[in-house]
Length: 380
Image: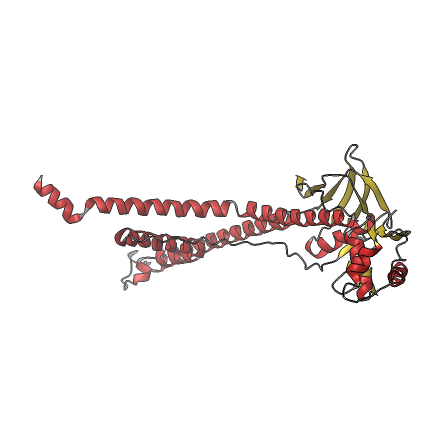
C-alpha cells in the first residue's frame, strides 16, 4: 500500500488523467466547431441576405405611412412567403401614391444590388387581387404602369419578388465544389506520375545481364519516397493545418490554466461575407410626386430641383409633418416667424401662394385654405 501510494504521488497519475481528459474534451469541441462551421456557412449567408432585405422593405412601409400622415400604425413583420419573395403588411388601412412607391423602391432597392431585378405587386387583403404593380429589370425596360395616380384608402399587402435571390450563394458553393474536384484530380495525377517515376527508376536500377539490383548510394529522400507526397498533401490544406495548430495551442493553454489557476476567456471571432451593401439614402420624404429635401431646402421632381427659401421650407415642413390636418394660422406664424417681432397674416398668405406655384407640377397635391382658420396639405 505504502509503495503504491508513493508511486502514485511521484508520477501524479490523478492530475495527469484530469489534464488528459480536459485536453481530449477541448480537441473534440474544436473539431465539432470546425465541422459545424463548414456545414452551415451557406445557410448563414442566406439568412444574412434575407434579413438585410427584410429591413429595407420595412423601411419602405414606414415611409409610405409617414407620407400618408400616419405616424401611429405599425408595420407588421415582413415574411418570406417563398424563396426570394417577401410580403409587407400594415396594421391599418392606408393610402399611397403610385409614383412615391416606385421612387422609394428604386432608391432603397437599387438595380446594382439585384442583378436579376425585382417585381412589386400590391394586393387587396380580402380578395388577394392585384390592384397595382411594376417591374424593375436590368435586362429589359422597366414596366411602370399607372403613373401619377393615388390608391384610395384600403387594406393592402405589398409583395416584392426577387428572381434568383440566392443565386450568388449557390454559385459560390458550386465554384467551391468544382475547385475541390479540380484539386482532387491534380493530386490523383501527381500520384500517378510519382508511381510511374518509381517504376521507371526501379527498372533502371536492375542490371539487364544479371537481373540483379545495381549498387548505389542510398538517398534519404529516395529511401522514404512518401516524404514529399506527405508534405504536398499537408500543405494543400492550410485551413486544416490551422485547425490542428490551434488545437495544439489550445491544449497547451488549457494545461497551463489548470497548473496556474488562471481563467482565459477566448473571444469568438465571426467572419461575415456576401453582405448586401446598402447605398446611402439621403434624408428625404416623399411628397406626392416630389421628394422633399429639408436639409438642402429644395423639392426634387425626377432630375429637376426646385429651390425653397428658408420660410417656404419651414412652412412646407410643418404642413408635411401634419399631412391632411388643419394647422391654424396663428400656429404657422408663431413657428415660422418666432424670432421676428411683429408680423402680419398677409406675409403668411404670400409665402403660401409661392409654395402653391412651386408645387403646381403635381396637380393632386394641394395646400387648402380654410377661411379664417388656417391651412392644410392634402391629396384630395
